[in-house]
Length: 345
Image (cartoon, rainbow, N blue to C red; front, top):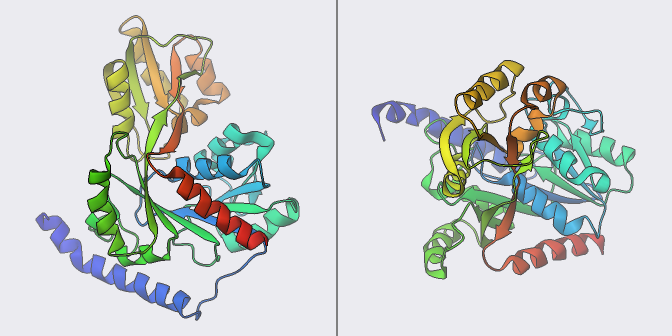
């Protein structure tokens, strides 16, 4: 730990104490959590930044949407609206947030997508608007204890496991590792596809010091690139663009499958301007037959009239992703579905 982080350590201790007092109040029912007659599933993490929550939400939605009427509820980070709002065809990422917009674009009317900073207030509005809802998936809600949940999923990245991290502001943890005990399952995301049982075991053992929850391992599956323009061909030479918390896996995948000319990183949840896109397309003019490859999360923010007017003559694609369990995915599905059936009974 360098000297600067060492100086921050007292603040991490103070922050941890505040979080422990808060959790104690909820544990002892001094601070009340709201309960609802819908099935509440939470997807969250212990740390700030990307840990694969969105692909996990999408996995849960795919698993349940053909059996139940499913809704997702997010806070709508960085949106320009406030309060409760359900997604419509007229919405944009600016109005509901990039990740909820991605859910809506991907699943359409198969599910309900809504946003609201205060979930306990948003849920009644959502249920009144869509009384047929049976299952609500809360996105990024592990610390949002004001709502009781029937099944809680915690994600942690393989390359940044929560038990190796530190509390804010020294590290990225929102609360002490011991609080993972509130989870029903822990999913180690972004794991290598080739991860063996022998390599999984020490991670499972380390996590078992904090919780009795079953531990699963998942990897990212990249799909066939999808064009954002009239061009339907991905050139061998590419420039990779990412505005996500942890772009390393994306850049590595692109590098393994194409001739990667350059990587361009933006902050997580970055809102692209027309000027940003003009600068990126200028790079394509320097050499013939080069494609811009975006993450799926970024692509939804390029679907505006201003940006489309800039990129139409270029080769611009995004790579869709899905989460896959490396082993025992059927056990995860059984645990999740059992919790749903239990509440429905």
